[in-house]
Image (cartoon, rainbow over all chains, first blue to last red):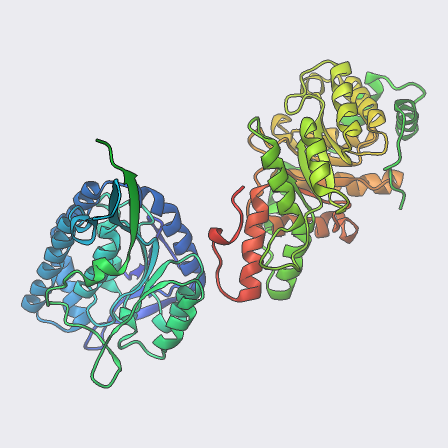
Length: 296
Length: 328
């Protein structure tokens, strides 16, 4: 007798809890070759709203944690992610149409990327900060501080390495993130949510919404309690005008990280296997400069 | 509909109560017989009804109306030991201009403060038409002698309070001494003069819905212009089922005596969603006559900010955030 399949409908990850979409909607996720994989919740604008509230609530604690502590937590995320290596290889392989070996390379790269950003948490201030020479008896110190709540449109094609590459730099510097995952390949993001939930990341620091990017992105871009937005995920998303998103973001002077563009000016997804550099860490920090009287 | 705002003496109130009860002498026995003769509250049914009314979906233009109505019903409250003159002034400034980004925003009905802050609030609000409400009678516990309670009330009225929020003696109520509770309310009502009297029953301490119903009737009998759930200092504060019982009481009281009494849930109402649930209930249980600041109030402080955020969302089309309202 054959065993019945356990049909899965994955949930969103908001405020440290796995919730169904407020809208009650879900959609079928297919593999690269068109087979049914699982159902995912289809997030709505109200899920985005709830996620922003959760991210705002988590910001104080996360931004206030020591950089060293954030590094430890990110390293722990890498550990737990590696512990689920086999599951991620299956999901990345099915979603992106990769062989088990190629998927293994991607998963390992994602782990390495997390470890790399974990190392940066307590070093970024030395690189981006400075002791400024001033003409007076003062110490003049500039240091990077987190921007706040960052909306992230995660890449559409690279569902794990790309996701980790956009989320890790945001939270490494003390921001909290509201992430709209890849619409067609959301399953690695769902599992990544389970990794986050079991690896000391406080609830609300990363919120993952599986949704149609074009539907929820305008709400995230226009939300006045979001301080910055990363538009990476517009590349390859259906029916989305990233210029309009940037205009909406200007309403409350959000920081905007534009997508990479090809020669023709169309957004493209970058090569995630390349050295990430500091661009993404630098994109979501504010420089605070303090004057302090010098003693003897 | 007659409105019992006029000054009434304790003797008048006792005489009117005798008429309602149909007795020649107002004794504790007569009050007990009457109050315990009220039908009991079906706890499960009451909670189910409140929950089902909370599921109504209020959207778009109805929501806009509800938000503006709810803002107009707020008694903007600060009742902290740490209240300063500056804090009361800034609260009054907020009442005058709730949302500087949008001058069409309605103003709340009143500012509610401790008695010693009445003069400050009165000066800040001037002739804006926003009332000043003062809590009195040894708020929040009510544990003081009657002369102290009356003096507390007169002090606040003298300082210019338009409305007095008194607390009942829960100890007396729970031990069955209804006459004491009645007399205290009636005397405070007399001390209020022309000021409106809101009677705080502190439903969180009354334990049962039957007690809430009895306390509501007793408060109305003794001349309260409003019945109010809670001080906000005790948990649970206002809940939907408790407010439902009170709304039924004011509705039936008008049938019985022709006098309309207001209802004020206070404490724990923080979101627009909650406020709208209350409005739905007012409309369904008491009726449209109660859907005005004259007959229904919210005792709240943080609720106003949430209503303003929702209002901004409706006008601008984008979600707003706490950066766009004042910190209070």
